[in-house]
Image 1: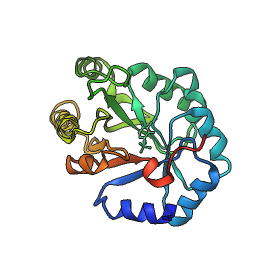
Image 2: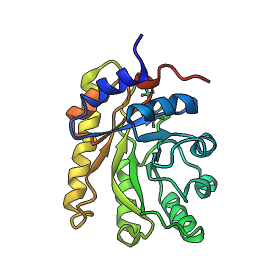
Image 3: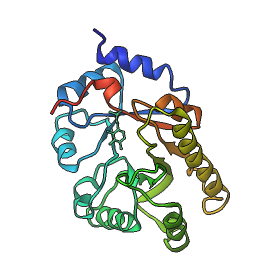
Length: 225
Ligand SMILES: *Cc1c(COP(=O)(O)O)cnc(C)c1O
């Protein structure tokens, strides 16, 4: 039977220059520690409470990434220590992150954030529509952020076996990134990241320019609870 280390090694070998977010939601701290001992340092969680319970039990040099739907009233719990948030889908979340960092005197570097775009046809997925994104970029003071920094775009492709559909959605996200690099983020070289690809579709995401892939099941197996 393959170990967490074997599975991580297989994925690391496919990454090129991209980064791996090991998605640990519903997995125990023991399994996360096992991945850490194998050399993995970036871990992703999608629920605030679960994350808070794990953080204190694990090494302090872990880079914690929040990847799930974030409620505004829970932002305060992650603001002091979160490294990256992949799931900013409205301006009010950014405003609240800024406010909590200020109130709590965050001294760590600015939180890196991704704007999540709705790239699949599925109603249930979150994210800005293209129109909402343009409206946000037009109105929000994106270059005056103090405690956060917008580093790129995140998206989830449709859950389907049709590779052409998935590739089309990833490529659309890639071209939106390039478009914004020439417009709203012209003077910001840090705006260059693409967070896309999960266990079932990450090779396609890498093919279309992903710089972060978020993988859970392929590392840890089926979720435990
Ligand atoms: C759970 C989750 C993942 C990882 O999914 P797997 O299929 O287990 O690899 C990636 N991104 C987000 C936003 C998730 O919620």
